[in-house]
Image 1: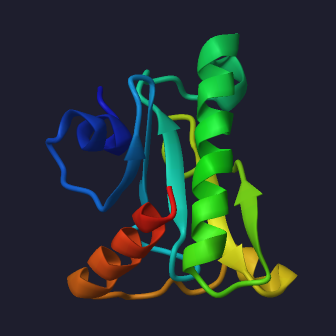
Image 2 (image 1 turned 45 degrees about the vertical axis):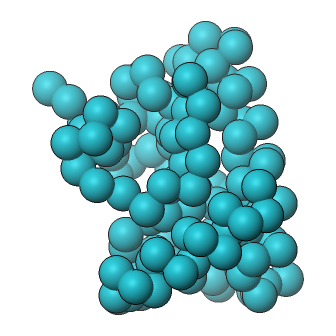
Length: 130
């Protein structure tokens, strides 16, 4: 059965796309911890990040690096935190979260509720720095 990320990758579900390559996709988390919270996923549906083939693993991390640099320039924050949790969706992914304190990377906290226009604006700001 396809994951929600596979459906996003195939275009069945829309997303606020940040970047895309032949092997990876980066898009805004629609239930973000902070504004600019982005997910980087391999296009290949693999449950665990560490089960990816070496090339795919490298591709995901290289995209995460590029996107994190763009997020840092586009979203006011002290740094961009990254996390691999893997419990929410059985499809490998990296969370990139603009943070100002360690508490900003708490996945138990209440998520932001943003409007479509806010997501569009954030995505455009991040893409500008890629």
